[in-house]
Length: 198
Image (cartoon, rainbow, N blue to C red; front, top):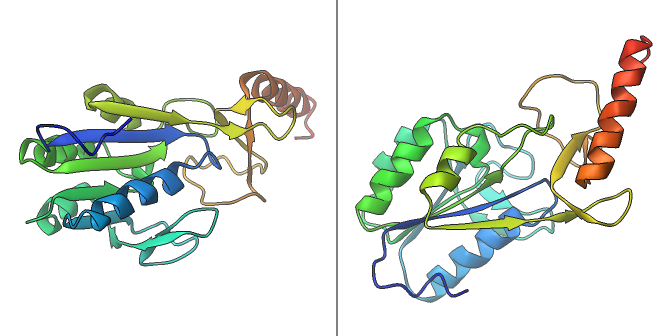
């Protein structure tokens, strides 16, 4: 699908899926293509995401692109003047105002590409992602591979007992699972919790 070639530039594209599904890799790919086409590109990420770099968006594969860490979506509006394309990584960590910010940018003729987890570690819709998917012109759902059975995975199963909604982590803290294996893992954890030995 050639998303770069449309009559009207202003639009919202969402790349969603579980952890380890290639969301950031796809975001970087699209942004690099825009840069190659001499479009003015700005990339933003939540300031709290410092896993690989403070000032770069970095994929699990190690590919990176410069970015600006921001505390709130409103800062994106202030800093995105005179650009053709805005990229936003880890969108699930922003508040609900991100949807209005993306709509405003798109209405101003900006191509907005957003990447983020569509579900949290409990399997529920995460942050502003459902609203962003609803207003986007294009939604791409990418899948990881289930580490237990090899099927396509859409769940980010947490391996630790930490119950915070937002917990930065990698393979030591999360594993991608398919629906069947996720439900099985949740049932096993529920049994352990009921027995008092989670």
